[in-house]
Image 1 (cartoon, helix red, strand yellow):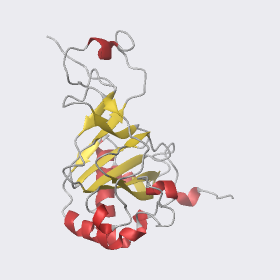
Image 2 (cartoon, rainbow, N blue to C red):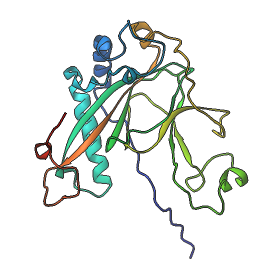
Image 3 (cartoon, rainbow, N blue to C red):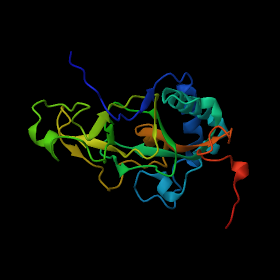
Image 4 (spheres, helix red, strand yellow):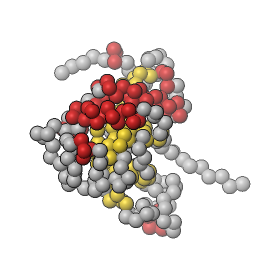
Amino acid sequence: MQQLHTLFPTLVLEDGSFTLHEEMREVLWKNHSNHIYHEDNYQGYNGPDGYGRVLSHHDLDLEPLWHYIIGQCKTYVNLMGVDPTQFIYSITKGFVNVLDEAHGNPLHHHSESHLSYIYYINVPENVNQKLCFHDLRTRYVPWEGFSESTKTSPEWSSYQGNWWPIEIKENMCVILPGNLPHSVAYFDGDKDNTIDMARNVPLKIDPNKLEDLKRSRISIVGDVLLTTINTNEYPNALQPLQNWRHFT
């Protein structure tokens, strides 16, 4: 009897069950000037985090969203076979990412965090670039480049691909390991054969203007650290904050 073993998979959680999506989007429209750019330093690029605007998680008007995101982080930990009640979950960074139909995000990771979250709060139909995950590890295949040079199917499988795209939907939340490389990318044709990474050119819209924001794809992005509650049970986990000493 033949049996296939899919070895060393990586878990990425996608959820769309948040029930207060519309309300939270209205909060973002109301508070957008606190999350996007300062008019005096906006240079036409799509990452407010590049300007140090990484405190979106301190917006208490979005509190239901933060609790939902942490709930999804706990679900992720549980799916990994670990008791999620053994940790304190700390959001260390939160920012808003803005894309028009001609832009993406270059390959990057959030390795300073344990988990990262992406919540898609506004997704116009015409801004349909895909979220792409990349495997930069050495893959165990017959020879390097085997899948790219020999595959007969126009679509990737989990055995072949060293990158994996997913469609973006409004009210979609993605939880991923912080060190998992990812990008927002363009593809050549319907079969996703050719990936084109983000272009470092100015946005066509002005994200300081609310009417332009409403025509953009907006995700709320950030990072989470897990610190252990029981140091005896998990001595190798990141220790509670009260155990830390701080120096400058």
